[in-house]
Length: 214
Ligand code: TYD
Image (cartoon, rainbow, N blue to C red; front, side):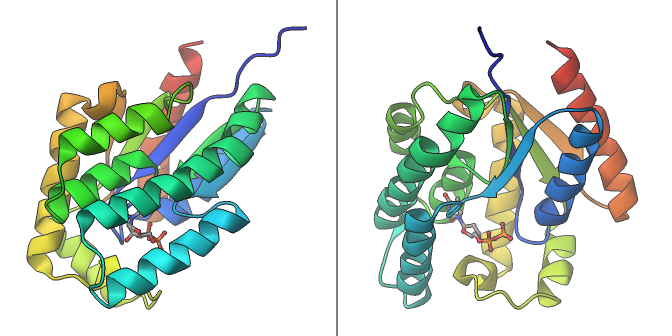
């Protein structure tokens, strides 16, 4: 009675890249193919991690926490989320689509906030043991699009309030990670510019590739 393990797919990108909309469309696309799908987000996804999310946001908003402190808290939230939600779902053959994962810690706390990327990679190897994502789908947009789309949002996210330089570092960091396959992961860079339908079509192609690989 060997059940096939679900696939673990991370959606990545800066604020305003459209992850939250696209992840739900991706879920519909896969469910129509008869697959079992769970969508979740980081930091959060389970009650304890949502509490850590509030704490990180409050501390970061008041500039009371640097990249190392943020990293530790993001990984604490991640550890709880992986063990109570992600691992059991994957074992039960459910495909997990997540809005962000440890790849965000590399982009934000590493590239944008100046934290130590090697250290982030080492901690992720410990915390992510046995649950390495099968794919990372990066929604790539320009700094200009990110600024424009975020201006329309008010979500209380302290990272979204940072200036243009911060977002340029983030976007460059994401592109570099996708090119080098950061974390030994399989990255797919998808153009996130254009209409929701256009981006959805690009993501559906990538999902088909991922799921056809068997
Ligand atoms: P969220 O509202 O989910 O943002 P978005 O809609 O942009 O995905 O807030 C998550 C914020 O936390 C986001 O700005 C990125 C940041 N973050 C990190 O800095 N490091 C991390 O490891 C994670 C998971 C998120």
